[in-house]
Length: 354
Image (cartoon, rainbow, N blue to C red; front, side, top):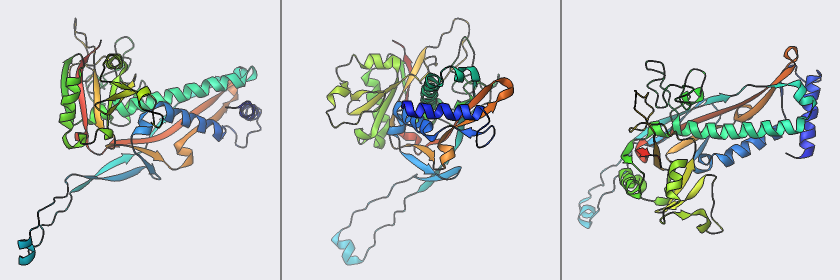
């Protein structure tokens, strides 16, 4: 953000605090700030540039999918002479539901901070909002699970129950609850490969085989790995690093390189405290779960829904609380996510950490 924009933001905040806002207690910060945050989020969450997106003007959208393919038949001259028609082949279709969900934050800021340097403060807040939103988006698309059942509650969720000392990536009613909005790639995976040890390229080859028809074109595939597996891949001669792509290549944030022509992405959003089946499980005495998962999938199976309504794309609302000598920043975004074909996602589970 330029110095001029920062000055404009500072003046807008100060005017609002002084009671000069156009609407008491509910002024939105400049659209430039929101646009900058959106740009940062799209840059840092590689899945935004990798998966297709659907514009959504309403809360729910039914997207068509195929549950069966067109059949082709042979046609001979004898068939033509006999007037024999071709057997009809109607593709079987289904629908996938995209439904908008809201991620929101509540950030209280003391007025004295504004009085002593709004420019630096808003820059730090802007970057933090963008970084956390990008991470949360990626984590939601990877780890989301809507299950709340279990004893205790959320025990049946693939992320397990949130606990300060043992499972900070788990969920509860107030911790990481954004992961309960929708099901992510780990939950949707219709194919699986048991690794039960260190990740090797043999496991990747097995996963390619599991995807079947979805692996026909390697350019349509991506491999998503946690950071602990990234360091293993970087030591393999089979990995074509991004510096070998050439000057015209499009490189997304988090892209490590290519293996067998498949783009590889690394992220810190995949947990490293999973059991051998690829989900969190409360540990018994003396039992330690320290495995993780890798995901091989067809890029065009997942779908991201983006709102076309300006105030639901991404906004930062401003609310003054003079009695508490502070104001609130309320960043909010609507997002939808689902997959067309679960068989186009293969989860390699039981990957031990190096």
